[in-house]
Image (tube, rainbow, N blue to C red; front, side):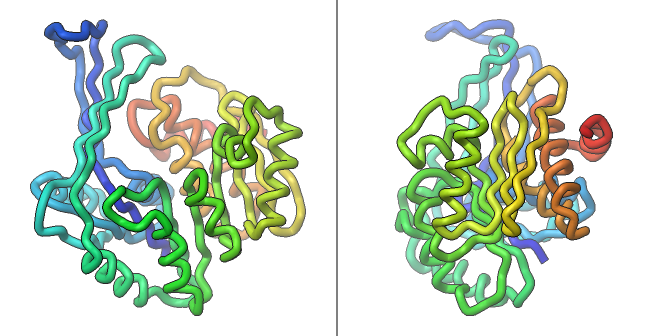
Length: 302
């Protein structure tokens, strides 16, 4: 079973306008509400690819109930910790021109030490062979080494650990030899104090992450496609899918889901191809990747 952890899930309220006037009244031309959060995004795209998962994390208030009910209605099993105060985030995403998106992200509820312990107890139930996906940042109300604490808690289990995070949150998990990490090209370069790296430089930096402990390194490179260094020492690249970018939210999460679904077959090239197609399907759509678009883009890649 694949378990995804989202510390600060949200309802994403996406508003399209013809323009944006600060201090004035702006009327939307269309609006949508999506369930959001990086781990949740992975679960949603896995569902599209017929791979079951269970969503873990923290929810609170009426928005938390809406998140939970939405996921369950879409066939995703949930086991959230319910917080007694506050409410889960609402993130507002304003699209006022093609390719222009302004985000206002909510703060989310306070997560106490007791709630973290409840999550740990849920993780105690994982079995050898399960996959644990840790995705995104952690809120200020929990220790910033939370991923390390989780990996310490489960270190005696034979789990496939997947981490999609940036900065120290990612760096500090490398000694635990995660099965997969997925930085984007900006995050990878920033880890080493660099900017604007080309594909060759990104490859070299990904190798450094392997030396630091990562088993498989999947790098999303926007218009340059995707790069994978697998644990057998092989390197693979796929070009970016062709299409008109509409949405950047959840593309990396979709890649993680595509890779995990692809690796069900044990074929790493298929996994990278499916990851690239899933990421592209999210970029070219209004929400997360849908199966029909993933399949179409998969066939377009060679």
